[in-house]
Image (cartoon, rainbow, N blue to C red):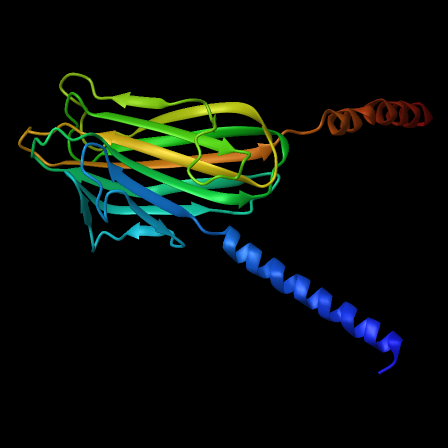
Length: 255
């Protein structure tokens, strides 16, 4: 093998190796982690319960009990590594019930988080959307709080920069009728995003107990980012309007 051929072979090997490493990093980047815990209960293998590498926490056919709460399902999704126009981390199909025991424990907290998002970067518009629906009538004292965060340190479950702050639903006296959805929103706010970054979204459910009924609630979380258009591109878009106007006027005079 000549020296020239050896150099060419080595360059090809390094190129293939580089693509292989990139593929591994990409696969590792798309790992969404769910964490579920109930405050007030002692730590155990299921409190908190942390699941990585799977988008689905529990299916309705296999509910899981943590403290006073039964979780029928939680599904997390994202479009990691994201895009300049739309990067999303979401939890949906969250279905929770709480029995009639009165243990004095705290709220159930469900979080979804993912690292290694790479887009958008720079000034970005961030917003969060939340929904609540009681499939049975809510009771006075039910409190549900949502929040979402962006983290430029790319840390899992980091609560660094909030997207619009905490949003809280509190059931009024007498509760709310069943199947009456509510919507809450955080933001929009403009964040200065650097790559890579992480996103985290959280819902805290503190449902009343001792009422003689099982309370069922469904919620969803979604946090999204999109790049803010650069002022230069907007100026360029409008700078052509006078030229078009002159061309139109000249054509009209000729006709």
